[in-house]
Amino acid sequence: MADLTALWEVGLPLAGAGGGLGYAKARAPRVYWSLVGLPVARVRFAVSYRATMDVCGLTVQPSRLRAFLVRNLARRSDVQPVPPKVRRVRGSSTGMRVTLRLPAGLEPADVIAASERLRHAWGVHSVAVVETRPGFVELRMTGYDVLRRVKMPRRRPTGPMTVPVALREDGTAFVRDYRKVPHALTLGANQSGKSMYLRNLIVELARLPVALVGIDCKRGVEQRRYAPRLSALAITPDEASGLLDALVDEMESRFDLLSAYGAADVWDLPEKVRPVPIVLLVDEVAELFLVTGKKDEERRDRMVMQLIRLGQLARAAAIYLEICGQRFGSDLGKGATSLRAQLTGRVVHRVNDKQTADMGLGDIAPDAVAAVTAIPPDKPGVAVAGDSSGGWSRIRTPELSADDAAAVCVQYAGLTPALPVLAPYRPVVTSEAASPGPVPLVKPIPATD
Image 1 (cartoon, rainbow, N blue to C red):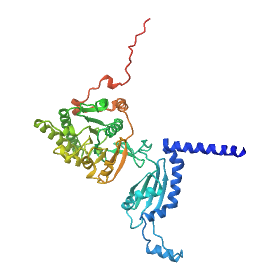
Image 2 (image 1 turned 180 degrees about the vertical axis):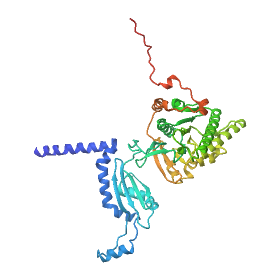
Image 3 (image 1 turned 90 degrees about the horizontal axis):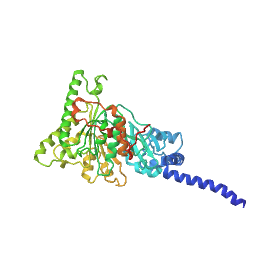
Image 4 (image 1 turned 90 degrees about the vertical axis):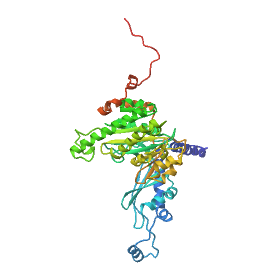
């Protein structure tokens, strides 16, 4: 009886602890990783580091001086290969970061090529390799799939035109820094999460003192709900053509201002005369290219020409482009490839054809095309983000409803700047859009004495 009592007293807490850890692993992965995964990973890393680097081909032969010292001072006949030196190990709620000093003979590309083998050897979810400075790389390990349930990190990069949009697979925030990457192309099929990405972008931009300009040729079904925060909105190709002409006129007037002050771009101007930045959001770029007859070709060619001019010149005038579409290819018409060349940032969600993935990422990160075609349909919001340096990473945007995004636009409607050149395209904000809320089903009866 005493043995059963002891077994009960010991077994019940152990079973409870095991069940709690199992629940945490499934429902609270951050807690599980911090309590169990991180200590185990650090021990496994410390114990197997040298052997893992050796079998992965990330060691070099020691220098002659090192070999001489080992044979004569340490009195050892065998001289071990030299792995990268561990400079720093840091743990976080999503993974672990290790800074390595590469020995002579190794380059970051060697470590990147072995990242998949390192992931299996140390039992982590993913290993990303980032070159921090010459001779140093950082291994960014994640202990679990951080993209399964997106939770944005608390620490985010900040700046005058920097907005966090999504979460990278290494646990860091993916941001749109318009001063570094002024123009971007975002592609994705239906139900791929492209609209969710644009929604998060609009919400973050709505909090900044910028002018938001929308082009939504689907009669405004996507962007009309954000009208309280938009300085201009075009919902037909004819309106889009006029709006693009107005933006080019605004760009040229800003160039005159820069010339008068001898400044290279808007950010070099004194704050009192600095014009407000403008972000142009094109919801479906194919609608600007497609025509139904020859009479529309002249308008199409002019719109595409104006977009290309904005892409080439507007960065200095603080006019930035966000071009979105379901499909993008050279068959859209004349100017499609030229426009793509001006869009430095690329974000590609799940697409229906490989040509769109090639047009989005093939020219800057060919290895990322295979990652795009592997995105499953049951994970909306997952995308591949690339840049002109050839690097790329998987990202996922947090879930955000259209009503919540519209409420944020109403909340920050007071920041909407009124630009005279865009006044003809300022959307009309109805009272319902300005103060959304539930409509009462019963008409109230006024109280009487």
